[in-house]
Length: 368
Image (cartoon, rainbow, N blue to C red; front, side, top):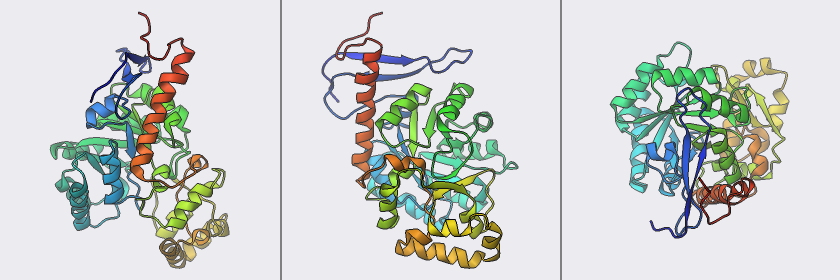
């Protein structure tokens, strides 16, 4: 790739650790070719852009994963709800569409040995994990992933969980704030990302929750992250395997109509380890708010309603895991175009708006 003009390097003192290590990214001010932000994450995973498709349970597919990876990000497939045979088949389907790195994601509290073994056998470049039970041995699981040749990424909702994951051998930590869609913790993204960046300074960190554009990516880098992981934003893409009416509901949302609840989990008979689910406040959700006991009593009926609504695109009677970031989403677009736009917006924000605030003229090198 050829670049013209003068390069400058923005170095953020965003790793206030005893070792004094810094998170560094190199930014070409004037360039020819696609936008490039180089971070510890892009270097470790061998991707062009520090942007990751979160491995959502029913929101990913080989087509979407391949589109994100082929565009230079990291696509991750939600594998927890697949059968062991399907895990291998879908990994093969991704490889048939791209030669770029991709990952498989497992929700550990709901992952048995057969599913984990299938994920290891598929040998993806990245194995992503989240939401373990307190009794699970992360060190043993991560060691098996490393033995299979995979880089290990682990999602957390507290700094304490980040330390646990780092001590167990995770290579990358994703810090997800409560603004995110689906299952989240209680900490806001801005505080959590900074806490985790300081707590595990020696490892790349991804910011997740409330990020939809290049400004969010630039902000995450300023907090000390090395990239971002997006869920809701990738649901509103052409390749996302959800009903078009669900996608449009995300676009129509102003971000204030989501709510934290365990109603969808009660309907599925699942108990999550320390998480609530942020979903769109639909008619069905409102029907059972404050009457969760009734969901337990009518579990089969409610589960059937949710499944049917998902199939036919009945948003009012369904459950749609969506974050507050829906308020920043105004269109459904191809995943590749979205990813490249986010990268370009982040580069522009750093090279122009932020650089001008510290007296760095565009196209010139800052002084010593």
